[in-house]
Amino acid sequence: MSSTSEDRYSRQIRFEGIGEDGQRKLLDARVAIVGCGALGSVQAGALARAGVGYLRIVDRDSVELSNLQRQWLFEESDAREALPKAVAAARAISRINSGVMVDAVVADVTAANIDDLLDGVVLVLDGTDNFETRYLVNDYCVQRGFPWVYGAAVGSYGITMPIVPGRTACLKCVYPEAPRGAQPTCETAGVLGAITAVIASLQVACAMRILCGLGPARSITAIDVWTGAIRQIDQPPPDPQCAACGRREFVHLNARMRTPVSLCGRNAVQLHELTRPLDLADLAGRLAPLGPVRRNDFALRFETPPYELTVFPDGRVIVRGTTDVGVARSVYARYIGA
Ligand SMILES: [Zn+2]
Image (cartoon, rainbow, N blue to C red; front, side, top):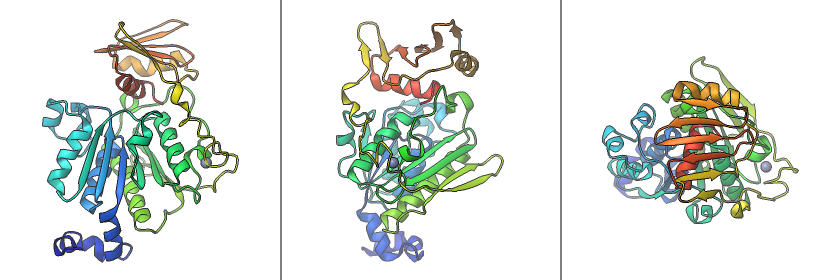
């Protein structure tokens, strides 16, 4: 290790859990951050400062003014330019730690491209906002035996859990099915920067432990920063009947053929692979404060310019205002939750 590195990371090296050996491992590590919003931007900044040598940052969205309240790497100029988050994050990190190599990827992670997007990394941090992508990351990591760290936050509440294939339960052991019905999202229920920073920090500490060869603390941590409640739940052992780590069926990875239909010419994308029953009355109540909602027994229509969502009770959604599947998924995740 160079003397500059020894100086730069001296406080981390002095910490007995890391030491020179651990720091060397961090400098050599290759980590992917999937989703660079509130969780991902804190993860990326923290790992860059800690000296993780290579970061691949994958995100499908651009920086907006309403992100700045909690997405620590971004600034007003990024929002003005509507820079892709992955690109804005890479620029910020080049100013924070020029020794870190950052690969900025502007993409929506799907079953069709996940092999390419996560190729060559040894650990994945979850910065996504939806279960669909998390199940996909879980399938990928369990199949290949790579660790990943789940994290989620909305309102003042958040939860995190390490997943180390062969040692801990995986996401599908703990949540065999995605939550049913519309879920609170950061758009509909709001979110505090304090909770996303706490959850991301726990994910980062866990990732550093794993990268240093220590293995994760085997627990699920749930925190509400508004009430101060912190709950630690023992992570169960792997479930032999789990579809992912037990039966190794990897249904999410294998869903490559079930891509959503793009309704070309109508400037709309239909998402039908997310099918699950939705309570339209409940959803209308959540969306009403955010824009015009019209509803009958057969469908709900919600306007959020430049997009318009038509939601059906079986969970099928048509997003008008784009022909980009990634944008449509992003709009879906924001307003319906997944
Ligand atoms: Zn499992």
